[in-house]
Image (cartoon, rainbow, N blue to C red; front, side):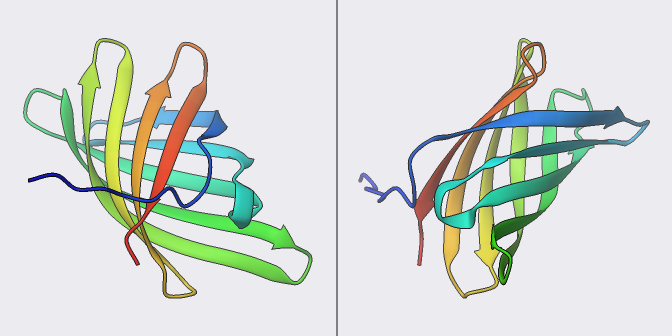
Length: 121
């Protein structure tokens, strides 16, 4: 069985603006221009698994579309580390009722986050 998903928007490149690594979790923040969501600011709270090579996370984001319109979204996901790269898969609920599947790759060396967003509803 295969699943075909429609892109919500073209691939987005975001900049990592901070990374705070704690004893039991890490917080990563990013910002960038995300098509229909405008200028987006997002934070990701990553919890570690036993060997600290992956785990679960929650996310919050705000998209400033124009001076009168702001999109708000929250999500949950799983993450795993492959070498220096962090791969994240997430389900996002947006305040307009839409739902997205997000696929993210973080490169901490380049301070980049590549995000692909697909329509769920």
